[in-house]
Length: 164
Image (cartoon, rainbow, N blue to C red; front, side):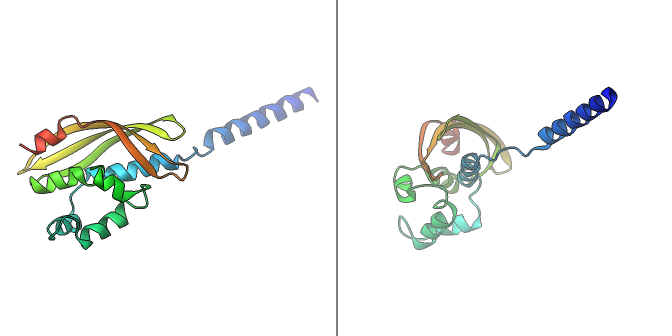
């Protein structure tokens, strides 16, 4: 009887251990939002965005459509963020100086419930030459999971290098 109890205990422990190890990790939807934002901001510009930038006027309908499609689902107030140069600023600089950017190695660290620090390596290339800069900042979200601010940005010389 004692051997049966020990075997049942070991079997139960083994099943519990296996279930605990295979439990899915909790998804952090805020981190996913930030990752999508960083990919949008530091990858490109693609053909659609280039065509929008080529249109006349400071904010042509094609550019508005692009922002609404790619940024509005991620940020609380895309117009305010555009006015503060927190959306498409790097894309515009890359476009104006014939660079192509690609976000690589995105690292997002949760600091508190709605505040995250991030680092992203940005490859930027022109005329077959590629370099990398690391961009880091703090990003805050609201209760709905929308980005409300980006602060303390260190662009690792990215703007200076693309403006040369």
